[in-house]
Length: 324
Image (tube, rainbow, N blue to C red; front, side, top):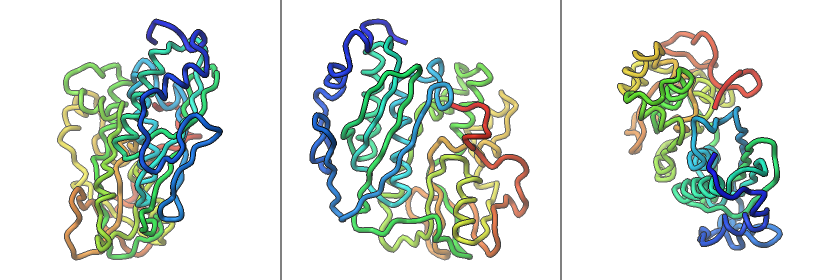
């Protein structure tokens, strides 16, 4: 970590004031940091809410990611869940646990990352908490405005639908493989390593959808394409078949050649790109930013080129041994 004054030396309240100094809240944050709780507007009379947690050495490593990267990642994974419901992110509440000897400069960079991604998603940091912890822990709660629209659920897929994706699944998983192999600094790894450090969910591909876009079901791809489409298949009572050729990403080929990896496995099982997967009404053009990758039919489960995929379908918190 950086040198300089530590959190212990500055103190909790001075650090909180430092983090919030000069920040401008999003319009729906009516009362931000400084009172007992934030006040967030709900223009539609309701809001979408989600929460997620990142734990040091489980979801990120300090020798792989900088504090700004960690902050952006923490917001992105929550903002993507809000957007996956068809809602606009408005406010984020962040709880940070860190050791007392954490440099203040580290927290400064972390806060800048949190704010940068919150702004990119359309919201702001409305408040939170700061506690002493033996390691770095970030817990984010995100709020979103449905903007008068009905939430787009995982349960709406219908036989005949087109399965489509916004974003490029697999790059974050390839970046993780580069880190594990100790080859993250090699030139061909630059893009995938960046994708792993800081996911960039394509928020606008969802938020720009018009009312008659024909979307039936939607999910954030956080645990892997197979796993998350599996949730759509289960909750909708349908089968999903993916076309492996549509998932090819030329950027992954040199990475796979260097590492001995399998690009298709990265695309199917890697989830931290925070792409979006959806099913759309057939026989009509897909909206901008979306590409077809498969189809929905009667039955259950997810197949690839008509066959079951062998092995893990993606990330699972209590069975996976490693992960950032």
